[in-house]
Image (cartoon, rainbow, N blue to C red; front, side, top):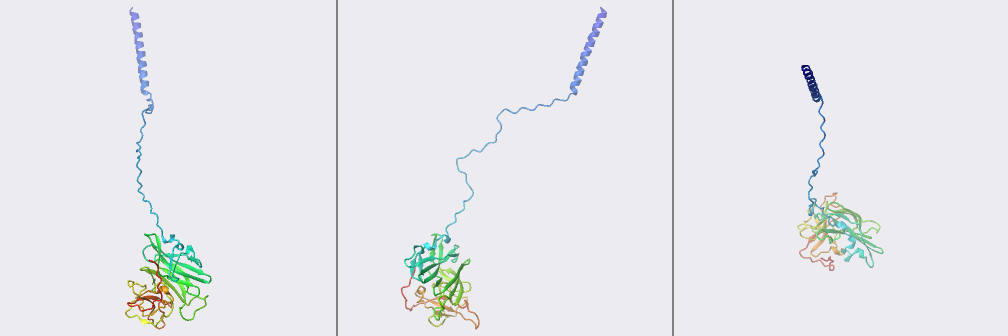
Length: 322
């Protein structure tokens, strides 16, 4: 009986030792193995985050950009041939596009410059009148009225070309003046043949003062048509007379160069140049022998106010309406 117990106890001890050894071995192996990689977290199943969107408004969005102003009309947009011309030389009212029963009417191409200093361009063009063997071009300034959006004709013509008469060689525009280059004939004395230009060549710069054409640049005086002749009377000393560039006493008298003498212009063959109480005169200057006078062979015109006008009136003067 004792022998069996000892053998059974030994068996029990051996089994216990084997189990313990196996447990220790398993524990050691577990400690040496690397940790398993963590599996990725599953995607969230809830509603995804979305940035809020501004709600649309029924009100129109304000545009800070200013609309560019539409450019207004200018005198370049005007068909001058469609306007009524107050033609002083022939004493008529003529609308070129409407034509004429006996004559052909046209308008030359215009040139443009701001000659009255109002910031808006003005135009210079001629009405052309022809009939059989007759031909003439009469040049007028048209100013621009920006408020009424209309072209307004200046009363006095500034140049004229006619068959067997004066010749307008060229018209041009500077920033503040119109430029007329012409060959003029003397109104008395021997005349060249009709095919020849006149002997007095001049280039004039013309602007407006009180809506009247006046000379500017090297010359002072009236800027309109000035007949080239010595005058109907002898020259008179200027003395206390004021010679104005137009028939208005408010216009600045001629001073540079200062005129020395004047002689009356024969306006009876240029009736549109007649003004009651105003005498159109030729202007003379004191020059030393051999010194060229201002304007060369050209004699400018000016106006003298007459307190008492005793001159005969050639006829009822033509004055444009208005």
